[in-house]
Image (cartoon, rainbow, N blue to C red):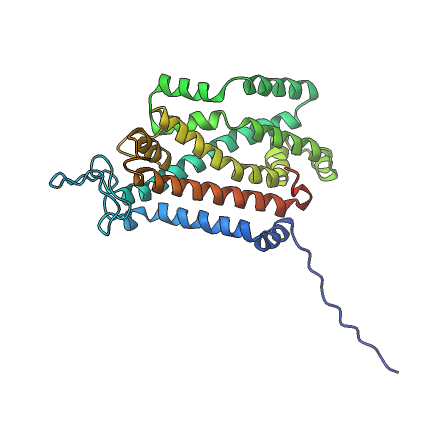
Length: 298
């Protein structure tokens, strides 16, 4: 009697994130954006090793103000003779910190508010969303400026101020995801065994709603960096002698740098533009990877 043996290969399931990562790697523009982000992140982390001078170093024994790019000063010097290459390197640390820390502030506020609103009874949900609508009507930059003037031009107030006006869209996205998930069978099963509302929200609902939120967050960071640059133009951003890319480019513009000292604008502006491009490219690639049906719709 002949026995036929059929070898069956186990078929392994692919998680959402693994499948998204595979699609993301196929998006060349998104990968290029990720490389740019990683590059500037490493520059920010190792700024102390890369920069030849401290960010506030002034050589009082030489007269090298507004020096043009050279082998000694690759990016030239500013109005006080400070090395622009070193200041751009240290500026990466400030600009990325503003974008990432402020985005995390917005994330915490927005996700918490949106999750509670989406899980709350309909009347409470409606009230919370009307509050968001009212806040949308307030000019956000006016609020940030008011906060900075009232509490002082401190770096942490800049993070809190921009973060406090950047959470509303995150709250809406989170609420929409929670409304979609709240009636799923596993949520009903968790309710039936007495799982608390807080645990349901933060242990079961938010982790399953995090995909679209992360995508939006990656697209929010460039916007926050531009807001910081605008505040620097108004004199409310990062305070001297520290400098971000936005404040460096803005200050260069006030000196008529385009006509006389273009290096004061070109190098910090180029660093900022490349980072914004990288984050936008990566964010859009991540969006398409997590939900290909959204491609070319947003």
